[in-house]
Length: 480
Image 1 (spheres, rainbow, N blue to C red):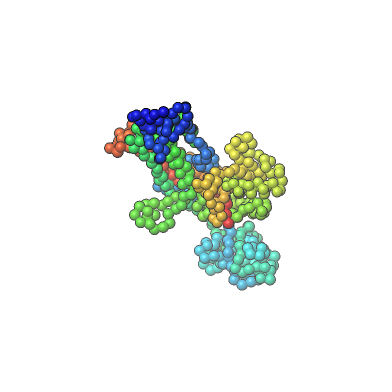
Image 2: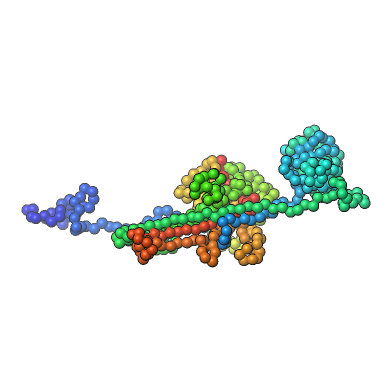
């Protein structure tokens, strides 16, 4: 068969209906492109969801609440302990009568005739005594003289270390007719004023932006998607906008979890007074809470019981939630399975309206140990390869124990006492501007006519911080 003249494109006639290099157009790098394509490629329109649900937020929605604030700083007060106790006291001399000195800077509020327990924190030795005198200078002085009730010699022979003593008051004892209204130090009781500890945190401004230029908006290319926020169908440039919004919503929670206060001097806009930073959950627990290092199933129930004993010395919140990475969650399963299969599920689900089904639907499983109920679930943030899940080992975060209790505080906006969870988010808002989650469109494309920029800018902004109250009831699990 002869050659067709002139040749149109790169198609050459053939005697048989078959695919040859000479009778179809090539649109790859080695082919000569043309305006006609004889054989169209098979294209999958639907996007493949190979990472499942990629969003990480949801942790704070489970355990906390969100409330507005109008200031640059949120300040709250926490109770101190009720009873009188001194750690690190030292003994001057030895015997049944001796003088005890408090650590420098401690204000002595123990009175004459108070009865005390003397404990050696190193050896565990103990004795009971009555305060017979306070050093010259009055009841607020740093030294007290005690006399042993039981004749115990506070000596090394009786396992008392003169430099490591804890003393706490358990009552008082007076002889008949003894007055407490005198003027001398021996007869005046100290009036103990309650004190509290103040904590503060500052909101941080979080911003993000998605920009698409006008030319790209006029070049339509559809992709069928199903996004994590519920949007589905055929999207165009809005797919990128949707993912920017999802990523920003994750940042709102990640900032509250990972935030750090600015302690460096800095310069310009990064000075402490201009950019104070914000204290996140992990920083709050490490600074004011409890840290468990190297929890493993191999250690058995012993490590976990040590955590419970420490919780007993703190607020002893009955119901607690465990948010764990995969390996730590498996360690808990192995620990419980090694003791009794009855641990799993043998508990009342009071935290979830006593509904086991509700707890399981939220991904929680429960167990009880001692007087505590624990509800355990995986925390995706600690498993995701793009965040904490990519690294294990030294200083890695492997889980967190969050108390499920609430505290009563005075709300200045509502003007009344309300109950708030120990963990909650404060965001800036007023009648003029609500900065909980702002989004706006600028530019001159896509329906916006606010500037001469040939693009559409979608802006996201929030200003918020996390309030971690009673951090002494939280536990952070870290790797070794």
